[in-house]
Length: 422
Image (cartoon, rainbow, N blue to C red; front, side, top):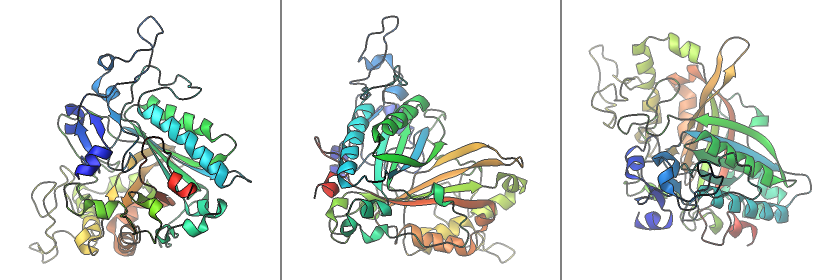
């Protein structure tokens, strides 16, 4: 992991690193000054720009690196705010227009992630620093046909199979281009979203957009895995950067995408909007909820005992002769050892889009998972969950997308350049 740390460095204060929660762990992270170089904003009473990181809180000064071996936003710690947005190329736009758009987007992302103003900056985030902003770009299956690059489309980007429990809205699924934005400040995140939308100009239009959130940075007294809107600790079973095979499971090695070397160092993102049927879930007594998941709600520990990080004892039976962790428990069915070692790095956001006419909340999980090959990561696990997961009665998959996210870029490059200029 030494190369990742040097090539995809994220500047974090000690407080931020120790406060890491959720999926990512600390891959590619390095302790250092609290970012802040190039921070812009209005000095008190003067209207003049300043670059003093001391004027910012720890959260505001935290900065992620745009350049590196991998794009930011994959192993970066979960941020408090997120936007997922897909674009379709406009009629008549092709490879040339796509390349120009990715150049603009990359320049904007680099500046904003450094805490600098973008071109024609709106001033929305004028008083804030980088706030852990990350911007991540990916390509959908349809992008390659529209740009005359069908021969460069990896087989790993073939459409996901249909699952029996899906209730997908095609208008909120897939897309030519995908952008993931994350930040620890809501205005910083929106600022990036607005800047990228303006950058699209006439080259692309928004197909769909989803907004999400997580617990705020520093909200807990000690580092804790995030909870979802069901109140469950969510992300315990993620692969860890310290594991020797982490890179090969999450990032694409050279020669592994059917000769499409432009994906080297990249990853594949599966995106699912999962509605949680919270009224039904909350009517379940606590012991029933815990059996559905296979873990204690209080601390995320397996029902077989221990702590959150204890291994599931899938062979333990109770006094009633039944498995302590039920056969259809979510944690049992999704466990890597139950799926031939299939692994994916889950990095979701929660969402709440209001109360429906029937009084039920339109809320749930913007599920985002990362893997070197979705046919070996997401697909086999989801097939098993589709056949018998106890949690399925309390969730509904309403949108879906699969995107090829190329590797990171060096100074002077833009994201996707190795594809678009080959």
